[in-house]
Image (tube, rainbow, N blue to C red; front, top):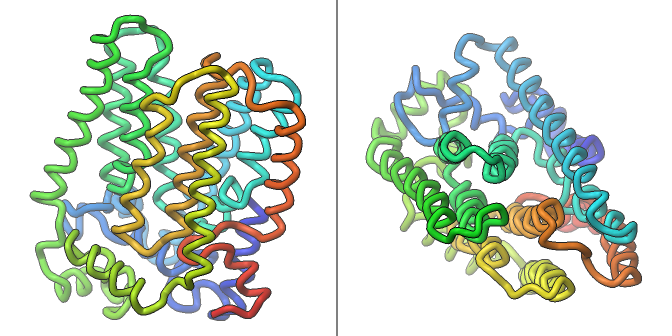
Length: 371
């Protein structure tokens, strides 16, 4: 994570000068920093303003310090959680499997290095909520664990609604597949509660969580913290049809080269192929949990953060693999030689740097002098 952050910081200095010089919090990209400005107290109930509300007791430099400290704490929490999960999984599989699983999380461009590179992303908060939910799904009590999962689901959607595509889809699939209850109706009940909590939250956001005050009033309420032409405002104010049209227009304008799009598709196929191979190596048929990562794919039509969506797809894939190991569904990954070979290839790909947010591999692009 520290390496990823250092790369982001260095690239920001090369491209724009000292981070924070454009009005963002120091150490932040201005795009990510802007997401901590809206809050329920000043702008009313709008989407993605839950986290910003936590920082209303502070203002100015004190608020910037609080936000930075919060995001450092989030990254540390994620690091501890991943380390703990790897420790739990370690006795379940052989040594080569342990090496591959660790590389999938730590030594891959779309793994933890990208968490540091994309410092301050609201997705990181939701990753913690997703991890808490997966743990809660396997607690023995009947009522309060699923209630906790529903609370986490509602909270995550209020943090950022993209959680629907990688978090809710994955949780519903895992709950329905189940590993701790032979009763199908029980598994269906769990999945239905998660889906219901998500649908109701999204309906509330759709009805009341939009920026109804209008662009000018909203910009004024931010008190100059975000320039009226800043890209983040376009993202906040675009409707679903406008998002679809925007993505189509940007693709037709050549935002991504044919080679980059081909690489993106190739990465997605390779990731999913790895998951299929692990299912087959454990003599298991593909189930809803295996298909859950496909829920990320609609994001490619809703936004141009293609590297970010690819990283989310990777996260979903590795989460399903890790969940299978932790619960005993996967007693091995692949053949030992294949595990080691993949670990070497994936580890070597880390030389390309983090996978990025919009364009793939920004460090490699910078080294090649790409725009």
